[in-house]
Length: 119
Image 1 (cartoon, rainbow, N blue to C red):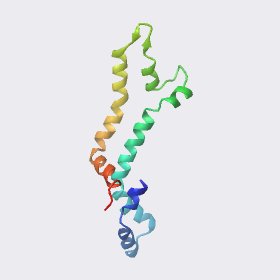
Image 2: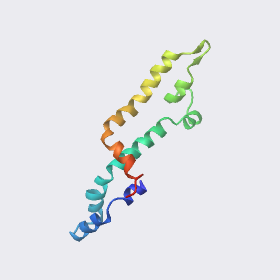
Image 3: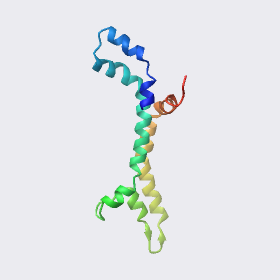
Image 4: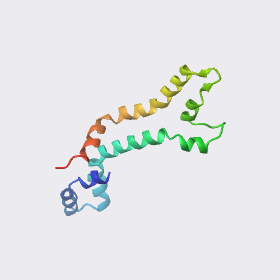
């Protein structure tokens, strides 16, 4: 995000200040709309990394309150892994992430590529 905010033209902010906009107005009306693709891509990356966090769930939950990654890992029964049940749990687990990616798809490609290119 640092590189993405640095690529936003400083001249836009200066011209808004000359026109009488406050720093708060410049951020909300100019900088934030230009940074939306980078924010969307960063949001999706953070969502995926935090959604699948296994170690925190392993140490911070009990048997009465488990997260989906722990429930999926616990499907190794005495007769072997229950693949059908694991598959359903995995589909339930990835559905919100896929829904967010579809909702933010117009920002993803632009947000991931703008900070990586110079020039």
